[in-house]
Image 1: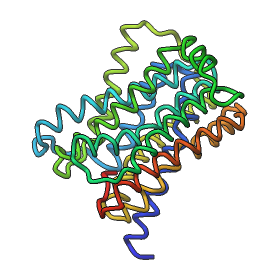
Image 2: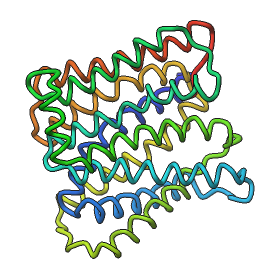
Image 3: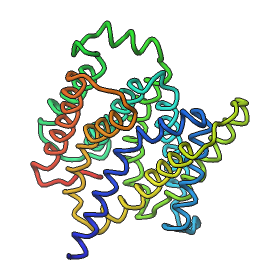
Length: 300
């Protein structure tokens, strides 16, 4: 197998790892708590990254990337992990995970608006389709049900709000760091910073005791590996593999993630939810196609 194909395969493994994150984070939070579980997960993931990716020489990093990149990265990871951890039940955890997967659409729209990414008018129906998919997925068993959706959000505005903010923040991270990073990869120190912030929050909040057993340790190790190795594998794929293949495949993460979460968390999902998940994927792919029609390649 050619090295480029191997790198692409490694990138596809990253997509599968990321797709499992919602279910694994939820499993960790049920044993260790939302904040404590996230803190432990990012701590273990930081160790994994330090051993595999290594710790870079920060003096070689652009200052703006260190400041803005780390700030946005930490903010996103806090929103992602806590939105899932604070969910009232497993079904709600899957729903907020679906909201988080609006980030590919938001990223492409941001690239068009702020980075002058060339695109066609297909980006408009793509964006509308993604948003409609979220409304459909959150509407319950009836499909698009605005009153039911608003009632669900009203029951736990923090969890849903964090998920939506996270999607916007990650889009900003992708857009900003594409211009600032200068090829540098700060994932290891950024993960360490996330763990420090979470442990500080855990200490300030005075969170309760953790339930530690074989089941919780297994979930912790799997979640940390999925988070840490996911980023490491993605960097290999996107730098040395077929970037367009990986970009296209990444837009199927919402459906794969929902399927894995429904299975691991024993949370059956209604047909309207699956319709919504497919609409989110379709909208993201339309936006992606809109940036490729004129020969442009989106940032991934």
